[in-house]
Length: 278
Image (cartoon, rainbow, N blue to C red; front, side, top):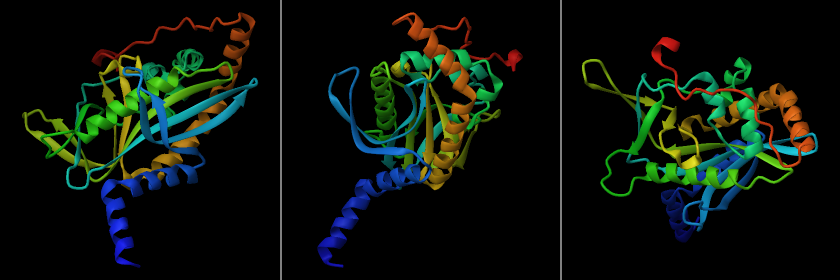
């Protein structure tokens, strides 16, 4: 290998491009269709923005395409670990774990109708890693926070994609941040000291309404569990399609019979669970 080739390889490694390639490869192996370096229109600025990896699995139902899609930002963070600020006091009611997902209007109506079903709540696709986080950052930094930048990026990306619904494609979106480096959970203990524990994956219940819900639910994971995450997600998506088929058919038939009106189930979805409701 020439000296120039070595320099190119070193530069690529420093910029994080190999991580994006590994993420795409892991999801492709799990059965997802992949788009790399895709673009979306920022819903706030109207500018074109890039998302690192888009991974999706589709199912045709009643002549329409239902798409479960992961919008993924990749961050190189070897020398500056990523931190998730977690608390056992942060909780979502089981129905909210399903309903508070970013989706196009018709798919969102379907999720509302499915949210009370325990077999849907228990799917890996809608799980919350305990204890969940209320915030995240990058350690040892005083300038630009790569983790926050990634979060705002995937939040804007899922918002933009949800607005692109057509009559034939209905999408449910999951924002994901993958970091190459250490990931830590930080929890305040009863004695007011902070417990710092290395983790491979966590869930951020972000109180940022960027995606239109009370929470933006983001999966944050290290590349060490990447393939396991992709494989488990693909399996859970197939289970979701099987369990939700009847409801999708009901919504699609209802919306077809009333023209542009979307079927809205009469279901109340609580935002949070209070301790006595647990």
